[in-house]
Image (cartoon, rainbow, N blue to C red):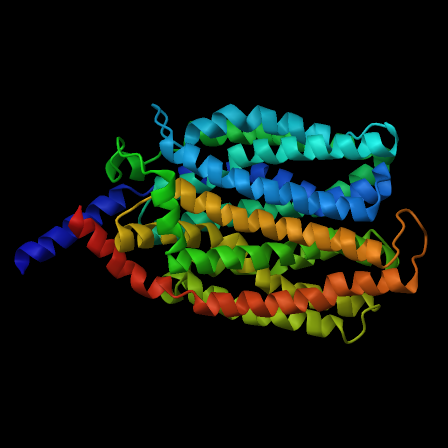
Length: 458
């Protein structure tokens, strides 16, 4: 009994040593700032840029969003396998952050620089540059997400690390949603959006280098046998029998579809329903207001109640947002109040999601004896990409179905109805589904025992 107690204390001590300090967490979060900056710029403004600035039809944009994101999701699986097979003196995730930071910055600039090639030329350019961007983005984002699970295995430390990424995710998203449209509008035309893309591209180059230099992979060095390469087929089979990974991946699809609608369709709503595009910056701020408030005491709440219970609670609150908006859809104050309430549903995505995804890697190792952090993160990222693509496709397709024409001062009644559906009705359904999936995710209850069993086995 005494020996067993000493062994448990020793395991706990080793886990404590394997936890990164706050400075390292800060630099990791800073790297995420650049990644999310590009993600938010593309997800929020690319549909609007194509339809209202570059002059590409809404229907074409909708198809492009879905096709490119589905392709993106497939490349995620390949990238996850590459990360798991990477062996270098810098680890298996960090090298990719160093290698791909500059290409991501360049591809971001190209994306928002559509030339006047005629309608067919614009469409070809849009497809080529968008697919290029998602290839490079995948080569950066998958290693970033995988690195979180490699920096520490200790559950509270991993949660705190995810909170750091949440803070920088929030700051990055706010920076784009508040400043991108006003800056681009002030400069004017295509040049304005190109300048915004240049700024974002330079930032991702800098933050990627900082994150590479300032972080350390611990789990791969101390836990995983570095010479073991798990066959893709074996890893994939274990993945699809991992019930918690399946739940969290489906959650990613729903949550990112919702997020794409709130961001990508919001500018259409403020322009044509509320009558002032400048309200979009305020909408962006209010969406993140609950996260800003909760940040200051989130670590204590996680320690007391756990990630899942907090995520479930705020998801239930978020359902009320679209209901409030329905009171008077054209009233600015009512819409903004509903937006702030709806923002509670974003807290799990920003604060907990990547930690939850990496927790499923421990569950998979405990259940099946196979550990594939890269594949776990890339496959969950596939869900995010599918969700983002589906959200973007819905925007383009429903606007086209409603007869939307970019650049008009006033849209038809059918187009207005589609804008309402994209911003209120569909988000309500998605918020309910998101909450149900979070209720089904109960890994937090098992995780301490899972970790104890894994440490005992090792």
